[in-house]
Length: 331
Image 1 (cartoon, rainbow, N blue to C red):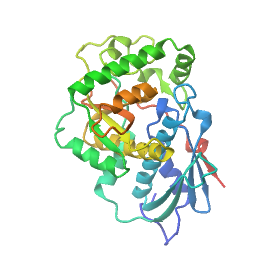
Image 2: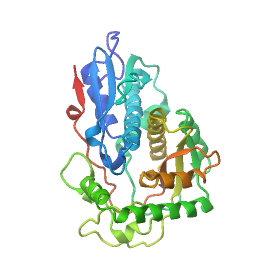
Image 3: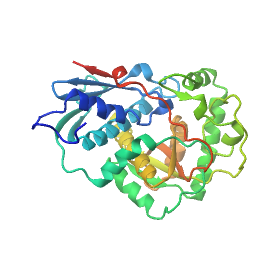
Image 4: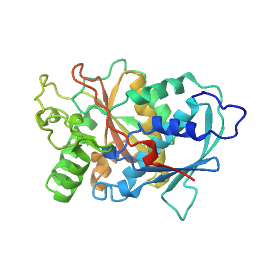
């Protein structure tokens, strides 16, 4: 695939679109549900949310669904830049069609910035580290860099101090307690987590044993994988906790949160920092209100991210992805 538009073409060809979306499909999504749909017509690429992949109990408003699509959108922008195409994006182009999240139009891209190229190379390497982590290495300047990147999307990134971390641990525990005996919620969780040989969801091999999960005080209670070994190292999780928050709580804010999530996770991957997005803590309104009180600007918390140094042992499991043909329609 040529990294530059050939013959002065005004738009990318279908092969380029498919290549970009194949790479971009590695974007993070809630429970790896991949709730996006793309349409390619007359040189315009449109992004839609796929409500068939929404989690009605964990995400009744579709907030996490739209955040996931926003992450895919930013991953796609990064992928297209590596193939020589810049994008001009219109968010929510049709008021009467709220599932139409973005329209992308193309122009010959500028010279590829090294930072974008490096982040694109990190896309296949990023994964969710659910095991306990040590504190991130060489971290002193990183939070400011991540906050600067998130600000491009009008999203704030805050690092929680130890006092706030203790409060967030309480929030996570309350959330887990409320959800533990919600049988429909648990059934939905088990539908998406613990399956095998599928193109969506979290495979069993990516889950961790309960004894390991217990060391991560802010982690989600996933189904127990069969035959999972107890941890050898019982050191509690020391990952840094980051919060992405927005000035309001609209679909546009959710899309921008996804964009910030994309770039923050990739920048951490480039720096050798492992990450894990914690969406469960912000599923309940009362938990989000408590987190808002921990933030200096009292903005609307959208996601929490653990960032740290991954254990040296064990595989780094990449979750499966749908083939492009399953989410791209050519008209």
